[in-house]
Length: 238
Image (cartoon, rainbow, N blue to C red; front, side):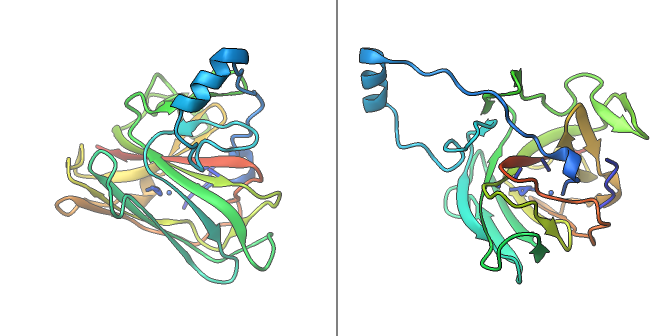
């Protein structure tokens, strides 16, 4: 994948459907305020057990779709299924992460989650709410911000819960099944980084019915999953 400058530390990608250089780590810096006293006790009784996507340290953007905690292996590929048994809003993502270096031999603890961007990405990082793809002139082209191409239909995160900076051999491969169909005939991932999005339109693919496969390419040396941070990608079609 061409990297110009997804932070998840866990589809795609996945999911979904999707790769980041070191500067792409979304490193959270704001803590969420909490209640106390009786209010806290009542809230605790009414609130379900937090998912792995909520139990992050430090707090990160929360993706309210499917969420899977897993071990990102170092010496072999790792396949993660989101929505395998219960699709989120009709979406299932299968993500294949490549071998990597930089962490312990046994792999690292990671999380992958997804969302559609329809009010299901909450929380703040550095005091700022999550900025959706295409929400203004927030896409980088040759280092300059401009209008984003296409329309997003999916967001995926990889959360690196370790203290290690992970360098993958290849970018992730995403297979996305969306029973709602896709909003275009040509689709590609876009990477979230500080200041905006980077459309990776060199990795485009055409949906076949309700299935889209976004390919993997060799890491050019600039892709990393930063420690205790999110790598985030959007699935985009035009």
